[in-house]
View 1 (cartoon, helix red, strand yellow):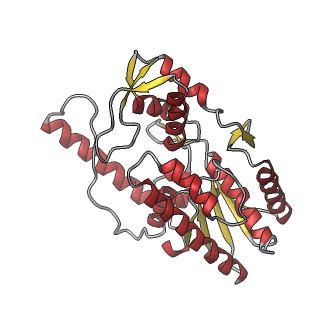
View 2 (view 1 turned 90 degrees about the horizontal axis):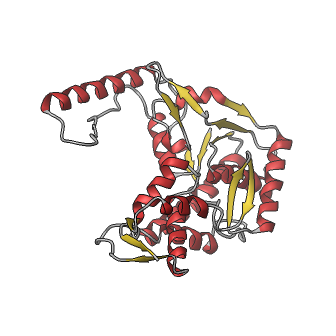
Length: 312
């Protein structure tokens, strides 16, 4: 069975899940916030983390398949133009823009596109050979876009009647210790949890798959700069759709502030379903409009938004 995901982090986690055989594991790292812990506190925390790891591994539900079945399409389809039948130069342009704040951004963008192009050819080959497809879809705009895009790709290739099933990400989970875990996307799921979550898999009827393909075609005709999930529906939206969240966080800052702090607060507090690349681009827009000005530059190797800004 072909396993489709829409981010590299989800692909890595799922590949580990498909490799679980009782021997996967390693050093367990523990991070501390605040002051430096004592040796006893560090040891106790390490032991708790190792016990949690052991329990998670013991409770993992085995999955059928191999890591080679995982095909990732990290195309960030919620942003940028939709003018190509298959991922090409225009999609590379969108990916490069999203990665522009990192020194290695252009290389990463090119790698993501090349991997997706290769995986699309492999997906169509295996579906034509009669293999079923399982799509792991969460609430993030990129994952919903990916689902509709995949349906359109199958339809466009004459494979609208392919055997497709969908695994949806739960909104939240309550663990035995009372902790509530919320997931924004499949990239946040532990390798030990995929097998259990596979119980949420449901087949996709052919008419539904074709409906999703038609919806993607409609979004392509609209060709907006951005797509977002609004009231549970994927919609074309203007490029300033998320600006109010940034402006709200900027208003809470002093006259000078760290740009990364604002972007991190928006991602952590609101979980908008968009990544740091898009938000960094909108901050650049504020600078061009004269709302903000940089007063420091990022250190070598750091993202462009690792700097201090001043309100104007």
